[in-house]
Length: 231
Image (cartoon, rainbow, N blue to C red; front, top):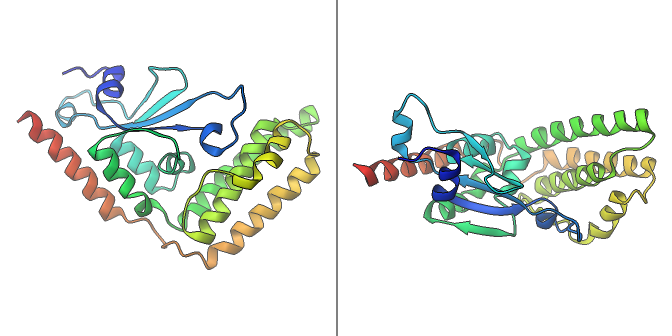
């Protein structure tokens, strides 16, 4: 059985989508096409001393994939990058197990997203502020994406649904990317989004924690089905 990373992605991907600016509604002529995916490593590979990789970079440029179990672990922790993959409007490939994963999108969402999104945003903001101190300006593209993330977090907490397309904020966000919005104004926007996300937390329709049992059931069924194919 071929256990090479390339073969796992090529032959066992159950879900793939386009992410980045194209999924967020922020694409321009020079935007890359970022592909993200989930592969289901055949169960017999886990019976070896050398386990299959938890993630694979490539084989195509700008392509990154997670093994199903690792993807679920990260999604249950409300990892922003992983959660957003399940809500991309640009799905390029699904199998039976990929569709089952999509059906569980809501099981991963919880009010814990506030902490993970905000911590991630805080780390990114500190990097931007360091750039301002050192160079007199931030990396404007990163500032744009931080604003997008904070807005997504706020709306998730308000509605219980994760929507990643920026909609009507597209032009204003692209103006930030081009450096046309003064940094103090960008900071004020970030502060407002942060405050709105904090306020939305207490009344959020999201559950307190994700549904681990439903996700565990999906993983167990997928592993069992894979094992039975070779027995």
